[in-house]
Image (cartoon, rainbow, N blue to C red; front, side):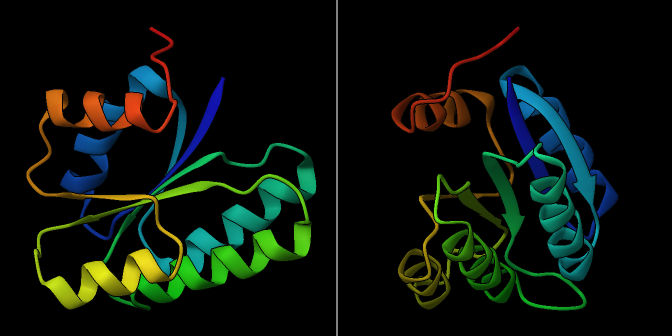
Length: 131
C-alpha cells in the first residue's frame, strides 16, 4: 500500500487531494512545510516511509520548493529508495516549475486537479489504484 504525504496550507486543497489520491493509498495531511518535514522524518524512523509526496508550492511558512530540496536531502542520507514528489500549484509560472524539476520533483499538477489528469500521470509514474 502506498503511503502518501499531502502538504497544502489550505484545508480545501488538502481535502480535494485526499479525495483524488485516496484511491492510490493511505494518506496523511499537513498544513505547513515544517510540519511536512517533521512527519516525513518520523515516518522514516518508524519504518513507515512515504513513497509519494504531494506538495503545494505556495506554503505560508516555507516554500514548497525548499521543502522539496530538504526532502531530497533527507532521502540522500537514507541511501535507499526515495519518495516520488509531485508539486501541486495554482501557478503555472515557468521558473517555479523548472526550479521544482531541477530540485527533484517527478511531476506537477496545476489546480484545480482533475481526476482523469491525475490518473494518467500516476499511471505514467507507476502508481496503481488500490480501490
